Amino acid sequence: MTTRRDLLRLAAAGAAGAFLLPHAMATSTTEDTFFTWKPAADDAKVAFGSGGNALVLRGNNAALLVDCKNAPYGDCLRREAGPGLTTIVNTHHHADHTGGNHAFSKDLKIIAQAKVTDRVLGQMNRYISQLKEAATQLGEATGPAVPKVRDEAKALYLRVEKLRPTDWAPTQTFDQNETLDIGGVEVRLHHFGSGHTDNDLVVHVPSKNLLHAGDLLFHQRHPYVDRDGGANTHGWMESVTKAIALCDAKTVVIPGHGELTDVEGLKAQIRYFEITRAAIEGAIKAGKPRKEAIEIKPAELAALGGANIQPLVMGAIYDELTASQK
Ligand SMILES: [Zn+2]
Image (cartoon, rainbow, N blue to C red):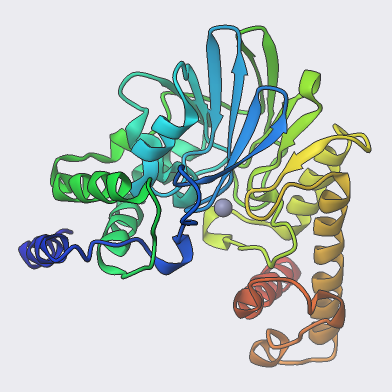
């Protein structure tokens, strides 16, 4: 909960001009947008930074936004996405993909897999934490877009007690498959079962040969395996295999985290779990205790980013594999 002390601290930080953005979100001094935007196809661009990668896709008098980043940046995302958004899709419930939903939920459709709703309603604390982090972590963000974002994030935090979990909830859900018409552009949403969570979507735009894999793909970095959120690495590999079946060699693949890639990026995600699962299976067969097993560091994965979370991945796989033996 927000305490009076938090609010006073925030006010003091704001007065001192110290309401800065987290270091990891520092933006370039040369960019006039807060997020780093890159084209992914004709009329399609991707925003990097401050949460999962977000896709904006434009059709005729309609536009789609896939994923909404962290809570403090929803208003900024809406502004930088440009006018005419009609539909929002969340690839899964995690707060770095749904945090900005509050900036869209009052007047736009937010579409997600059916299990997203309860999970979003149950994680208000995560959104508030994101707002607190933005308020208290001193960063070095500079550039023309930063002061406005700082003001927006601060304003949101100051009215956080008026916000409700439903401000983040999807307005429309489905179970397995849904097809959208975004101003004449067909967009197919697929839920292939439990993978990164129990509510992952792959967003496929056949006419643009474009695929947003959500967090089923962590490109060139260790993935977050959220067992409490329904993650299952075996299902994850199966889901990615089904996503690969939607691609050809020229498909542009947007990962949840990391740079734009192609089908080879998806194949590497499967390889990642083949390697890590084999390592843990070997450790279990050899009778190694969990605390030793999770420290295994396969040489093939040494170059990946996010090495600090590697023991968490190995632990989640250990738990998954030992649970299935019981
Ligand atoms: Zn995620």
